[in-house]
Length: 253
Image (cartoon, rainbow, N blue to C red):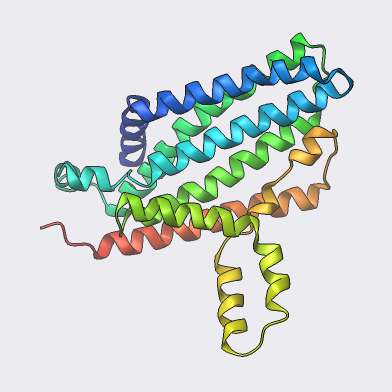
């Protein structure tokens, strides 16, 4: 119950944030602009519509995750409202998990609204809705799940600005991890060992990139999809465990 209460409070605070409304408006405009692109590319109208719509949802979800997640704990520390919460019979682990669930709740709610808008637009243009579009949206949710856990972890030990920088670096390196591994094969000595450690520490976010499957209505084997979901859950859980360990060591006296 404590976890759900904190999650609901976090959801309400994020909903009142002006940054959230500006990002939602931005994503809505981009999704609607996909209709314009379909008008000028009649030969590949359905592909452009799906590609542009999913890209808009992806940009919106990532931006909301970073801007909201990196300050999700720092804001309460700065406002000293965290003292009131921790003075109640609420464990610090429940506090971290509740914050994370609240962050996922606001992102899931808004991204679902965007996705439904995309599906309605596709319906209006008589574009057939197949499993690939849902696969692309699932990949976005899994990526946001992992980055949200990283954002909460960073928020427990550093400032919002540095947390945003770390999350952006994780996102960039996560999508370049395959190229990074190829580059490591040409290196030797300690640099290679350190590089491999970084490679296995940073999540491979390309695992969640199903936009190509959504554009061309492709599917993936069930075992592959299960492995991707398990990877997202395991990495998010590990990041939350680390966040709890760091947060429990902090002294708020």
